[in-house]
Image 1 (cartoon, one colour):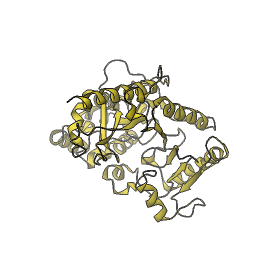
Image 2 (image 1 turned 135 degrees about the horizontal axis):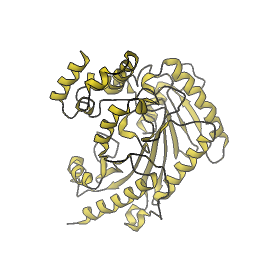
Image 3 (image 1 turned 90 degrees about the vertical axis):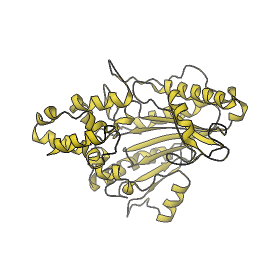
Image 4 (image 1 turned 60 degrees about the vertical axis):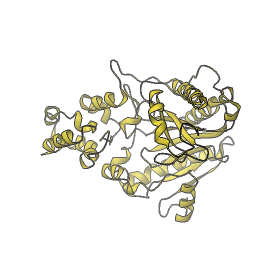
Length: 357
């Protein structure tokens, strides 16, 4: 029985939040149809017992529909007690100038991205091949307006076989190597079991602006991963660029899925709220033993509310001179402007620790 399998996981993998908070009485009280829907949401945590969250939403209304159960996972992961209601506010309350921390940070690599899903499609885990192609085609119409706008320009490329925008496999691999395009997800056991990587590469693609500072991934873990990036010292600029771009995209008639409690709906509950990850590259040679050990920095970063990755992203080593990727950990019950301030303050604190002999 499903309940027995989950209880075994609960004992063997207490870190698996899906199993930790599973309530057999709640599950058994659902209709057969809703039991089947919820099973799809948690199947990745059942077949991958070492999962931390162990759940991916399949439809935009899953978080509200299954709130009595999923709310426990969400609160546990995000460390939230009391009232839970996400508020959006992009005001960073001042100029966030990295050069004011140190002149050596005046040309930092800065990136801000958000996950977004449209309310009129199933989420990626429940999409069929036809859904994926239809979604991509609907976005191509939006991208044409971006391309026609002199503030954006650029082009759209597709991985969908037969698409008029299709690129070769070699071109795709080159974009992955340049960290512009996402990797083939079909090898990821968590995404595969959840159905998110199904039908690869249909419905997958990328819009890139003329200046290559604005990119939209189509068909990854969420319908859209929308990101702005640049090298500089004013964090406000990259946040403002993303905000203006999101407003333009929404003005084309898109309706992003939202939950009153949890904010922007994302496939993974870890990204709920703003759906945002904001990061910058900073050289911390002393704290990383000249880049040889990024893990040394993780406990320090955690105390400051930060996540740290290698220069090439998750599960990579630091770059030359100890360059690492810093980002605020919080997504939910924090505003976009607060994330900007947390990133600035986090960089300032890390820099101060690096300078200590």
